Image (tube, rainbow, N blue to C red; front, side, top):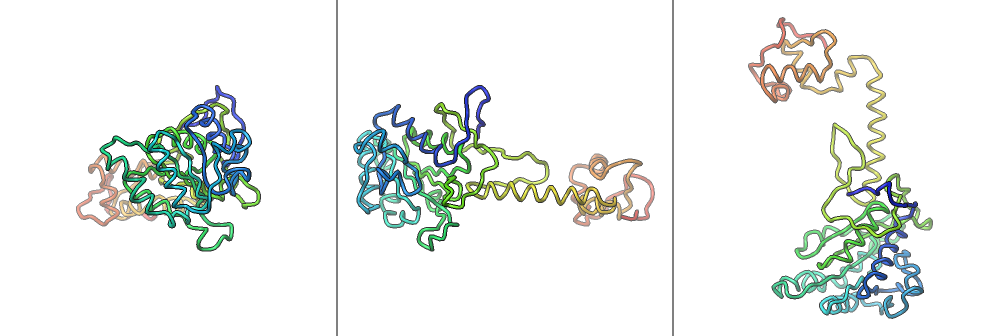
Length: 319
């Protein structure tokens, strides 16, 4: 996902505040946008996901609802079909099981069943993830249900910058979007939240982030880790730990470096290949590939037959 431009004014925001700012800006820009759900009004949402909006926009556009998830989504469906842009807050993703028929058979299929004549620009928001001792019915991570439901788009941000941009995109989208925020990333001290190590600088101006684009959090050459939500931060921590361990090995004796390079180099040497003076393991592998064709190193690692030494000498070199 795109990164904030240095030309615009930014400031650090927790994820929940970035998310609310996006909603506020869209409600100011578009009078058809409104919020609804349990405790979204004066309370500002259990997770502060609508904090301040009731005071600014009033009860007409920030609507507290009865405790009925099926009614909330039925109301949102009808409003969206009539040209409004509702944002329906369900508090916990676990509660979507109560109203799953509305999501699975109505919201996700209405545009298809109408031949594209009826658009449903609605956003369903809910918290997800565990870590706050809310027990089995309030701690699930159910994005997979919705990601495998045709007709829905699913958003799960990992940082404040993305949270704002993706929320703006979700509200402006003409299709139903399920927007899930991990409670451990919201930045609420009472939640025992995870401190974000990146993308906390959020522009004041409105911006969008296109769906389906990945953010490269850390460049590397050895392995690709794909993650979302809280696992992005845990993957960053794991990468740091691996880098520290790899650095310790690289500072050790030469034989440890060779052992870490990979079995293909050891096998090549065992089969009679010897490095040139001052040649690195990577250079040795590339030279062998150039002599015997691409992938010869991998073939040697599997013990393939017929590999000829790149340099004289048939006796295996010590590793």
